[in-house]
Structure formats: C-alpha cells, structure tokens
Image (cartoon, rainbow, N blue to C red; front, top):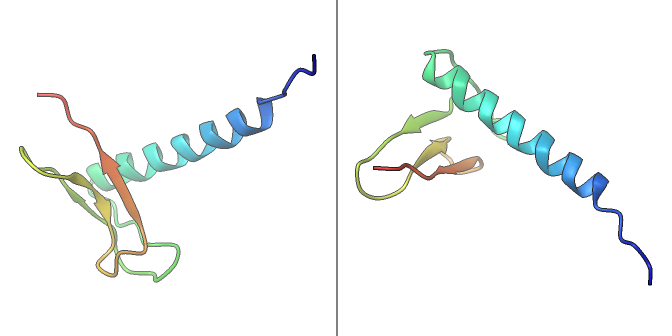
Length: 69
C-alpha cells in the first residue's frame, strides 16, 4: 500500500493560518492593513450574532471568525 505524504499540504495550511492570524492581530491593534488585491483597508467586524470577520470594502478579502459565547 502506498503512503500519502501530506506534509506539503499541512505546511501550506499552517502558513495560511499564521498569515491570517497575523493580519487579525495587526488590525486588532489598530494598525492599517491593506487588501492584497485592491489596496483598500481591511476592517474587523465582531458581532454577537451573525458573521464576524475581516474584510475589505470590495469583498476581495474575507476571513470569517468563529466566536465562542
């Protein structure tokens, strides 16, 4: 039986997670972070109900957050 190597997929997923986490941290600190696609500022939205996340005004970037209550 052939073993499947997931190490590259795991590394890519971890890198993406870390990049998104760092963007969220920078925005939460009050720093301006621009969308890589349209150069518009990213905004952090935290709602008690509904979808919370980080997005640009054009919708190029969308990072959804799952909040525990």
